[in-house]
Amino acid sequence: MVDFALAEEQIAFRDMARAFAVEAFAPQAARWDEEKIFPEDALRKAAALGFAGIYVRGDVGGSDLSRLDAALIFEELAAGCPSTAAYISIHNMASWMIDRWGADEQRTRWLPKLMAMEHFASYCLTEPGAGSDAASLRAKAERAGDHYVLNGEKTFISGGGRSDIYVCMVRTGGEGADGITCLVVEAGTLGLSFGAQEKKMGWNSQPTAAVIFEDCRVPVGNRIGEEGQGFRIAMAGLDGGRINIAACSIGAGRACLDLARAHMIDRKQFGRPLADFQALQFRLADMATELDAARLLVHRAAWALDTGDPEATMQCAMAKRFATDAGFDACNQALQLHGGYGYLRDLPIERHMRDARVHQILEGTNEIMRLIVARRLLRDGGNR
Image 1 (cartoon, rainbow, N blue to C red):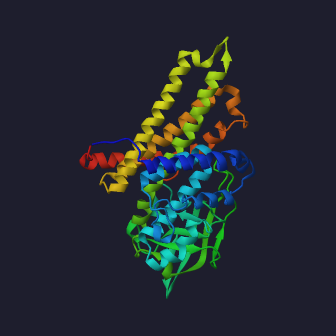
Image 2: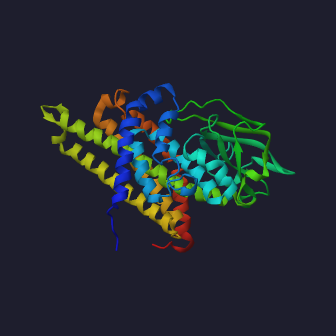
Image 3: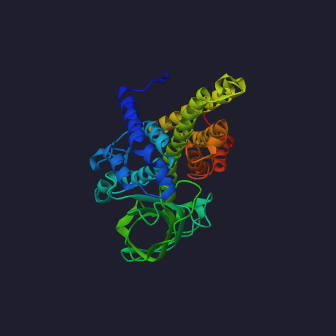
């Protein structure tokens, strides 16, 4: 039987995340955006609530919750600040890769500090010449005794230049996915450097820079999994990351929907509240419907990951594509409903819209999401 009701504990930590976002994120988010501040203190407060390792196992300090639980939490955090919530998602994804695929020694070496956000983590897959075609990455790691020597560059890396741990996909073998291996590169490693901080449309509360390897020597003991497993690890991480970023889009869209609703009730034109105009009523109704449909897709995809459903990758792609489009559209429609006021930085709508726009690009572009779904359907029709 399908049950859409949340369990009591899910309601409790959803409400806890909502209260935290209202108190710790929302009042400061505009300043973080304007001044390009990485809010380490606020992030560590989030970690104290268990949000740094939502689905990391408990023996290393993780919360050991489900992907559905994570979706509930990220929606609430993003309603306060989409940019900061998205960084927490990336930190969770990188930490989970170590937890899921790392040896016990690696887990106990790195994860306790990551769970407290005493240390921060980055995920390094994209390269200047390898974006959507991730399997074509060129960053190379050559074995030299008990080390790998890395050369190459990763681009658009959240946390670049600030993180303590970089979970990197590099080429140790031949062409294609089977030649890719996962290595953890620690800050301060000789031969590791960073590009200038990128000047971005949004996501300004998290640093973004190229990660550069120049004869960078990384111990073999920093390898996660076996040689040739890196692409599998990367794609498994992205399934969860797509759910998280979809939930962040819903949170941003929902925050804008709430503002639009209040504005329509309060604002008067032609002697009547905007809420009296049927055309605007329809627009608000469509925004709410699209966001709720997106939420259902995200929760189903999270359930699929939690239960090991063979269609999980396709369902994550569907949810990511639909929710990131719906979230951005809700922000954009809310801005339009506010008229000129929505365009001003006095309100958070334009910031939410700027932050949400990149969700349609990262964790696999929405065009790639369509490709994943289409290939699955055309291969054998999918389990529809």
